[in-house]
Image 1 (cartoon, rainbow, N blue to C red):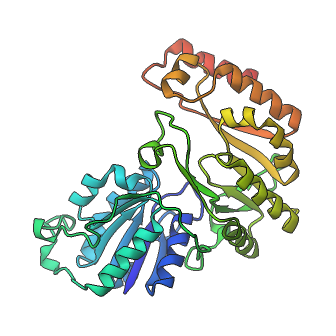
Image 2 (cartoon, helix red, strand yellow):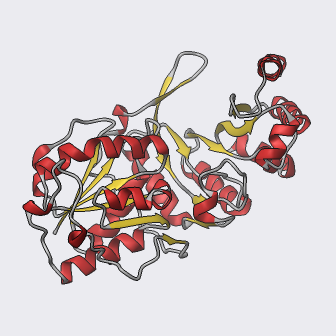
Length: 358
């Protein structure tokens, strides 16, 4: 049975969310094709041949782009089963099922995808072309059947991961590159050492799916994934974990082993301000193992807004972390929610001034 995995947007990165399920489904016996629409045109032959078309939707933009691609894909292949998986799938379950989705999975989705594939392989039920709606998208009510009627839409299972299979994806050199201050560019690989988050920030899309929990990817899997990307040309690795210090021991063990094997390889991570303060003594290890910058979701320099968002830090904490980073010789890359319902002109000017000061 042919399974087509489609990614529409992953911030310019080679998608872990295609490579990981490709390995799982391939082991289960699927004939898997990966298709990254952010880097390649729609391959009509692959769409027509697919028995299952599964969209990876890790964020809002990816979901919008996937939905926009649906009419054309349905015209090319009205009989294929349609699946959606990733962080934004469960939050849009009703909407996606109305568009014809048979399977909607979030959280730790690989096992669910395999179960859906195995169920469908054992219970073939090809849908007739005439069941597709007038717009080439919506099925009839009788066709809204899920291969997994009793499976949870969100799984937080502690999975034993497989090494991602990236062979069907465009080469790394075709993705976003890292540009250094001296003008040098580096080919960037991407992996994930954990998913979810143990925090409950009110504006974060992780919270309704993971509910304050996170799950790790086994270190040997992470390291082998990076090893293969280095062999494919990666000179820098982005760790896509929502917070690299949700499990600091796990994270530091991985980067220590990585640096021993690839001492010239650099990397970047994302860590909360709260964790950067709590684990400030670990920043030196990050720098010494090749970390060149840390992204942190500061969001605001207004304490009232930070309290509303339940960020777990204050504007003073941000300033303290900026100072710690200067002393450690490590670059801090803060991100902000510049406009909120509580943003004022004075507050916005204050944000710009504070950024300039720090």
